[in-house]
Length: 94
Image (tube, rainbow, N blue to C red; front, side, top):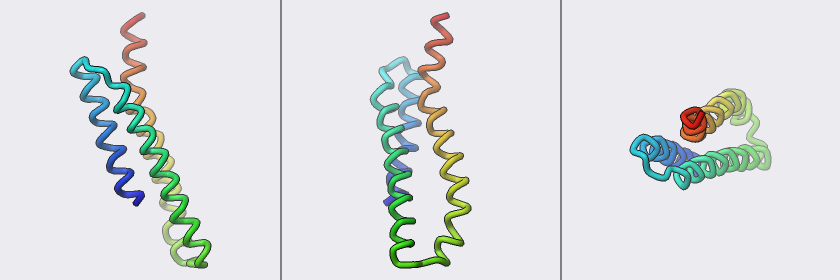
């Protein structure tokens, strides 16, 4: 589930950047990209919650430390890429 949501987030982010580059309205793809980033994080949290419920400690020990770092980095990148058009517009208006 989280993989599909993450892929949709990535595609929406690139559509956002493409639409900005072509001068079209990019705000809907930006909102979709950020929304699916949030849904990806919730799906990951649900997966980890299920592992705790079934007491799958080996999965938690193996996956969670690495995924924590990856999720932080990818979320920050997603936010920065999705708000880049807004920042560029602000810069160009000055």
